[in-house]
Length: 147
Image 1 (cartoon, rainbow, N blue to C red):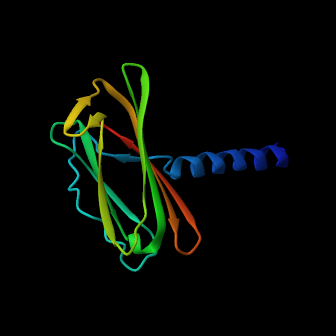
Image 2: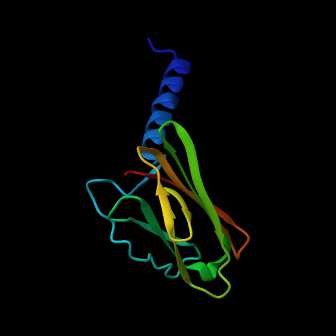
């Protein structure tokens, strides 16, 4: 009737399919239908860095909040996006130096002094944060930004 090898192979494929579906591949950040509070995420008793963000009301920048910085040696962040088919981005690093929280405003455009030129038609925005923890571990987080 059934060949044992075929049954085992089908069970393996079936299990692999459901395992792949059960693991989230990418977290969503800033959905259009839901505003984020922008409140800092406390690190609690864990030894990680908390990250949250809030889209500015004019939708021309996001503010990223970092908490639990006492657990990190450094935190690198980058925001990449496309505007009218051209790749753009912003990157930076936070050196905690005794701080437990900090924030950064990442503008979709360029600023010189108090004058900013904003990009239009923002697409495929991705925020990536790499935390080098004091314990020696490195955590990478990637978020898709919906504008």
